Image 1 (cartoon, rainbow, N blue to C red):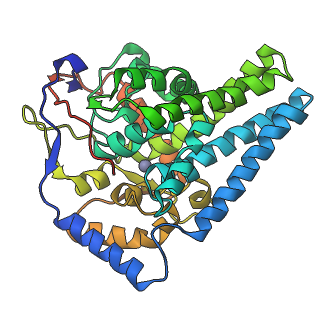
Image 2 (tube, rainbow, N blue to C red):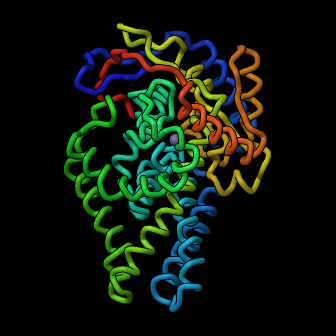
Image 3 (cartoon, helix red, strand yellow):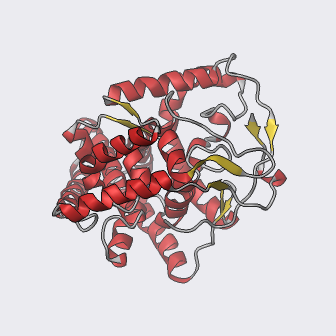
Length: 383
Ligand SMILES: [Zn+2]
């Protein structure tokens, strides 16, 4: 099936099945874990230390690239490293801040979330796009903005297939990087002007939020273009902006895609005509999400726990440094309730699954889409 465009939507809100037995038991077990151990769900020392390390590394690479590098062989590796440190900020700092899982103090979460503005995207829009819309409606075509890259790619069985999609498993990888440039310079502004993310209305920023949006964009444009232009010609600055942000974009997009756009993830649609999902919210989160490389300490540290996306989707307000510790509990609870807990044991296995999924979705035999009416919804609650 293919989901129709925004003009055809109704007014009712997308709902999930009312059965919270699984979710309640999960919460009880995880709460028990935090009560019986000396760990805290938020305000973890490991998180503050990690933040300091990543921000120092990011500032170091930025300064070396803009103020020190004098030749292409110095600038090139620095651009790659700067791109990777931007991705690390996204994975580790802003993501937790945006979910209010960094700290019990709202201002610390806000500050952490604003590192998103530092790396080019609006923290205000991202909060709505990711923490609200994506996390509520994950993998629901027409509602989850993460699986919508317009005609460039077909990521779900419910999107229209174009002829060019038969090559998408090759050409999409660099486009993931370019997509982030579009996000910085176009998507954020479009979303604020339209006041909606996919089918969910987003309140337009006002007052301090609007000042934060404008100030964030001004800060990033100054860092990416204004300051470098004082030392380098325009074409060099533009080239290195595209290169650095492109690398960050590919890494960020691929890591997020491995959680939801793989063969093992489900892509359910609302039941026709009444906009309700077959599963309860927590079951939906697990069955649309797949973990990878859970046993790798290095990947867990670098990727901000995004290799534990099942735990993240079930407990978005728990700081990611705790995911390895609660993961076995979550897996066991899924098993007890007959909920499929999907994972790839390595990053490579997840990557290959994403490649195969893209190939399958672009293939001519991937099915002929039909039309279904999906409901529109107002602003969801912040979670
Ligand atoms: Zn998230």
